Length: 174
Image 1 (cartoon, helix red, strand yellow):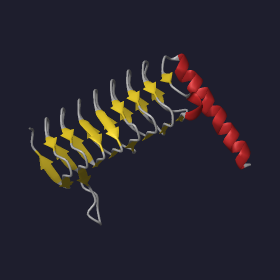
Image 2 (cartoon, one colour; image 1 turned 180 degrees about the vertical axis):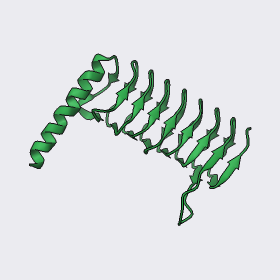
Image 3 (tube, one colour; image 1 turned 135 degrees about the vertical axis):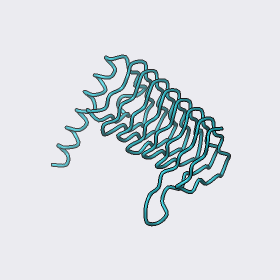
């Protein structure tokens, strides 16, 4: 029944949280954290309440996943900070030291070391170089109504607030 399925899923989540806690992952509120059994999380990572981490997601060491984030089939390196209320969709790859802030959505993108998108942005189908920064409200417009296109952002690029990068576009370094 649906009730039995729900109780079985809750038990698997509880066991997953127990396994992660034993491997030195800090779950602030395990009862309100939903992590699929196949997710891998490195030691010294902190996960706050309300997070849903699913699929084939891999999170490195010393990451901080703030409250109410959704992470689906994404790869996150060490010392990454995400959230609160961020959404990482499948195919997201965040390298070391990336900072994704509140209400930022990332899909099918690779963000190089130290990239920052602190709030209210969308990054879809993009390759972003190390140290680049997205201002508030910046959007990578990846869909033209028919097909999706990729955007390339070089190293050390500053994208100001309310900027729309209409793919395909290539921004050179700095």
